Image 1 (cartoon, helix red, strand yellow):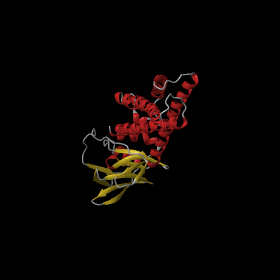
Image 2 (image 1 turned 180 degrees about the vertical axis):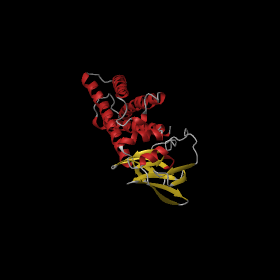
Image 3 (image 1 turned 60 degrees about the vertical axis):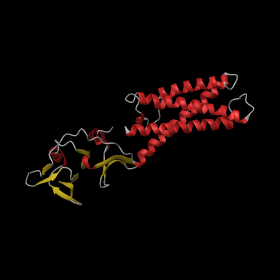
Length: 271
């Protein structure tokens, strides 16, 4: 829900800025003639275009998605609103601009004027999609936090026993204290929290066998060919120029390979 509200605020701010931008464009470039000689009346008339744009953009990009959040998911608009919403906004804004110009501005409507109206709003749509794309790339570059829903996690035993390949060596740890399990040649390296320090324990085993021993514990997930990670110690799933990674609570970054990315997202129960 927080992500949804963030996107609503972003769209509201974007619509307001576009409304101001259209007002300034029409004021300075005068693409339409108006029967007002008084400067103040002319400014008020031109501000009407920004009001129309603001109302219909909010209707199609905020009100409609908020009424149908499951069908129109704002947080998935990497390239901007769906084509259908943009098309409806184009039609309604163009018609409203035309009527406003004809009956309020007392301007004769021609095909050329309608063409200019459509071009103005098409420019808004194109710039909007560019801004969404830039925003998406920026979020991917710096890493965007993803909400993790752990409310539905089943209760599991507090202790986990991990053993070597021939069961000659074992280690018992609290599952919350285990941070990561890393492949290290013929061994696995178990990194765990002990009081205020991080310790390591080597067991002669393969990561695949250790993964089998952890099969009953849904808070552990394989995220890379060399890593198993404890989701209880994950702060966020993020991405930067090097690729996707999990950031732990201790600020350590664990790589997530493309092969395991979908499984990681499913385990995190991304909202």
